[in-house]
Length: 75
Image (cartoon, rainbow, N blue to C red; front, side, top):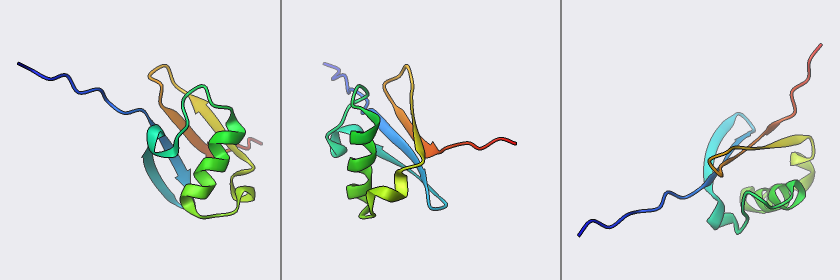
């Protein structure tokens, strides 16, 4: 019998010159969590002040994954 393995949704984070993927269940958040909750939880995970992620944007993807990245500034 073949066991089906469910892929874990992740948040892809670009922070402080690094890119990392953290499973959402490790952070205890989901794709429907509000931006503030996601950034607060990520700050705790990274052991940095929440203020460091204040200007970051949360992008939600159809796959259920999230991308948290610095806000793009044009001009």
